[in-house]
Length: 452
Image 1 (cartoon, rainbow, N blue to C red):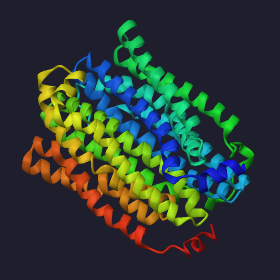
Image 2 (spheres, rainbow, N blue to C red; image 1 turned 90 degrees about the vertical axis):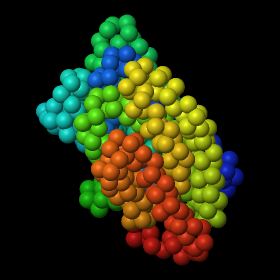
Image 3 (spheres, rainbow, N blue to C red; image 1 turned 135 degrees about the vertical axis):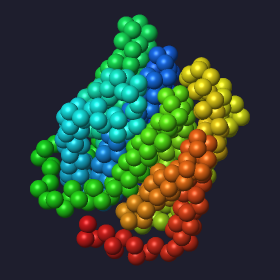
């Protein structure tokens, strides 16, 4: 490993380093979410049923991302660990294992997804009127799955190496291309939601090509079949380390499907409204996640070389800075939520259903940097049991019961406020784990990792 990069990761200002590594990731995630919002906007011109389909397929994309993040974060923590130990061969082994397993997983999802696509869409909460749009869009999402998964794996490994700028270039290029493609295929060629899906598939393929080229040119770990491990334990380590990410993102897809199904009796307008709200909340959340992902390589590197004070400083900075940045986008939506929903759908029924959900949702999301930062901390220091528990909170063991209980007692209002209530509860549960880490002495912790 080059001395200058090693020194930068372990000796330069923690605050400056997190910002330098986090800002490209924030930009990447913002652009990715902007193109999701662009999908919502352009598809919204086709009617509420078409827009409801984007909500259904947002859940499918969460499943794809769950696989990618599990492999990307799981391998990334080991890539950072071995590069901190100046061991490029083992770093390349974990990078290669994650990449090829990801491509195979995406291919299997593509095959079985296309075979059972209608049943899958119903499972995710589609109505009969939404189904034709969901199938047209979902076909292209499934076709792009192998490239979407491997792109996110490459992106995450580059970040863990401290090369966030290259990770940003690949995702931003694909995101901008998708926005242009939406306009071209929907407004110019009149391909409807089929065109929105086609645009997604093309942009994902090009993003993959850009990322693989940048990875070959700039990454210190390498991807090559010769580095593939023959030991199942190495793959299990990746899955174990990345499992919190799988839980966090996978539960988002499960809870999204439950949410869509509970919205079913209230009509397509409510599904469309919650699609707009969830896309906007994801957009706001991208800032907190981006800064958190800037913290991840700093945390993994410095924990491995036993510079625990740097990890603690970075932890507090990430949490507080994330809250500040999230507030910038959340506060306007708290003040004028109806105007923001109107930007994506002008039908009054959709605006009425989305206004309360967006306002309360943005209040709840102010607490998200607390739970997300705690989760990322324990994942990066390879405490996967704690990280998995924290990952279960927001979209799982808190949100799903709250969603059912609130819907049963408060009907539509209960659905609208369930997620923000869960965000607050998840933050309150996560906070003691942050305090414990900060107060604990860590001198002998790395001994636990010598058998890895």
